Image (cartoon, rainbow, N blue to C red):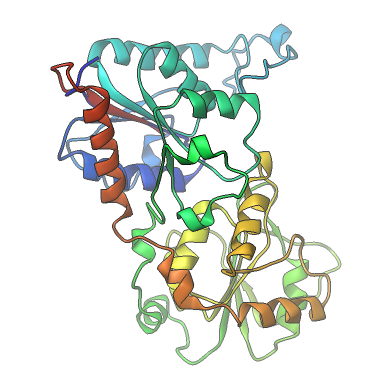
Length: 379
């Protein structure tokens, strides 16, 4: 290992938000030292600095068909979340990363997100930074990764921190609010509507349907839209319908979109779940906002929704409204939100500040070692 070595970054390939924040930070780091991105799906990354190396590794989570079935039911140790036995793909992925450690002598390894790879780096004597998430993370697996990390990177503001986060973890956390959602900032509503071909005068409610499971239910949306016949409701994302629905004419399902930030800018009001990227795009735009958290591991979205409610940044419901009056109560609360407070949560310099923090960490960790190791980022 060495002071001037590269930084490595592992990126979880199931979410573009992970890739976007990794790319925004890596592009800032590339001017200081080498950067390597590890990911099972390199195609999820947006534009990268040409100096950044991307290494594809097998998925750590998706079976390939050659796993040993006799070991499928063996229980996980408490210190890990996903470490099945008899998976050749995992063996190959870990071998590739560890070989890179030995060959490139990285200064730092960033995991976004994997408790197992954070612990692997520590066992390989490579300092690592773990990306911090909302949720019930006090289990042995998360705590082993967080406590063994030399630093934690939180892609949200200090004001959005959970009240139960231990002080010892907060002390080594760098908060990078809105990192990876720079495209959502300062988009003009009129320009967004013109680009999307929308009526500049029509009131628009945008529903951002989550990607988890079977999609967001359409039935509650029919109730909300029918109660506002003069308002256009549009959904983007994955929506599921049910046989008993009677869809109103002012509810339109657009499906998956590659430009959700433009739709958010064009909207008058927004309904969404609370994945980290979605949350920060909406905060950057500043909108009357109804949040309905979705099921995620470790109650991630429910914990984030509680923080948004606590800070007065969103009107929160723990379940989908089942009648028109419930929608009206939520919109009454949403209209009272100070959108300037929402926008103030976002730090437009978050990527550069995060990169500077990582570089400073490298310098402090390797002071006196003589060399300059690389920085590794795993996605």
